[in-house]
Amino acid sequence: MPDSMHIPQGAAVKEQAASGIKRALILPGGGLRLSYAAGVLDEIFSHGLKFDLMDGTSGGSLNLAMLLSGLKADEMCDRWRSLNIMDTISFGSLKDYLSDPFFVAAGSAAAFREKVFPHLGINVDKIRAAGGMQATFNVCNFTTKTNETIRHQDISEDFLVAGISLPGTLPPVQINGVNYLDSGFIQDANLLGPVKAGANELWLVWIMGNIPQYRSGLLNFYVQMLEMSANGALGKEILHIAEINERIRNGEEVYGHRQPITLHLIKPAHPLPLDSALYTGQISHARLIEMGRDDARSYFASMLSQGVALDPKVLQMTQQSPGIFFKEAMSGGFALDTTDPESGKKQGNRAGVELTIHVEVTIDDIDRFIEQPEHAGHLAGKIDFPPLGMDMIADRGVFNLFSPADEPRTKYMIYELGFEHLNRQYYLAGKKIIRDDPMFDLWDDTTTLHTLLYQGRDASGEIIGAGILTLGVKELLKLISSMEIVNPLLETDKLTTLSKFGRFFIGELWDTYVMRLK
Image 1: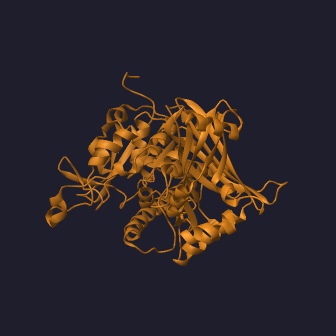
Image 2 (image 1 turned 45 degrees about the horizontal axis):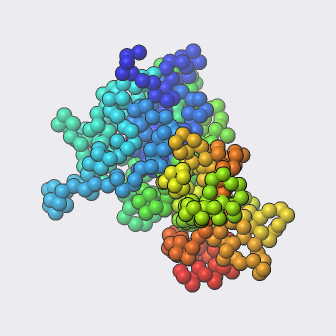
Image 3 (image 1 turned 90 degrees about the horizontal axis):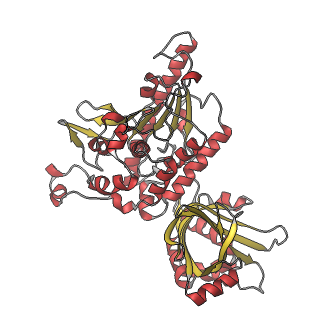
């Protein structure tokens, strides 16, 4: 192997030849919600799957480029988590917007070239030197209005930029006198290319939404055009593969295949929030990564050897019911080398040392949340604790609420964050103890988090610190102002969902404090 060559994670390196399996990993686009696919990849590779072929289209090309640049899937997740979403925005010159002849797109690709690519660890030389598999990138040749496939050995930064330049959002990229754009409106997933190259087991990570409800609003109009094109083209390719399999079953050899082709599909049950939710903070890359992992785990748990049915209906999703999102910041005295929260609080206060968590809580479906015994939501966030470090991003989180079996009038509100710092694993676990009893102060209960810090990936490790975090009035006001209803079907859903959430969590305190403030 040449000195410059490297083997990316998941490359088959011809080790599957004897089994007769030739796998292809197919990474389509999905706006900037690509961290979802990074979470899926982390789970796929944890199962030891290897791929002879890899293919990327639209935004999926970024994940493929990261992989071929030598990043492991967990490193890809870290890069997405730490990406400043505002670094993806750059504009053209003033004349581009003031004169029709110059206006070709809302933004420019400068941010991706100068900030996003370096942050994501994308290195064109390393991509070209990747071995052990064959990868391809897809771009739209605007002259011929067709999809053009670029081998990874021939990729350039210009082709990478062209592959993510959707019409109207980023300008076309001219390469050798030809304008190139994102292929999303032609096809967002290239199944037949790998099949023709010999792949007989396809692994597709699909992000594009596909629901029957037609949504209003300018952004939805554009997104729905893309969804129609992408799902329609993919559906045709799926039917084409079904036809190929039928011909094979009838004794014909097609593209060298004598055995039917299998499709494995990992996708969300409901459409992911649009890119706009990343910019407003309504969703985070950390949360999208966990969603990808969860969906991949669900697929592996029920996976059939024959894969999914070769029917476009497998791409369909259902509309998410209304849920709620909010941000919360809690801080308080905290100390290492103690296992008692009250003692840690006092020691931390004496030393002037506080631990602060900045979290984002998402409850996807408020009705399901209330009905489920574990009352589970999703938690993402970061931790500031000077003795360890600042802005330590959690790579996993737990948020739920339950009543102990022996104390039915008491609720525990659980906040847990797992994170890595300086190559060591930590797990922060806190709980609010809410008592439905007039003898206790409901305000203190709902704003006080008894917290322990563990060494390791979960709460089974050694306790190395403790303290008590609190939510002050100022922080409560910020929490309330951050509340957003996700997936509202009707305008009335907003108030209804908010009321359900508040009364379920804190009962009368909701009416006393929150509804007056709202």
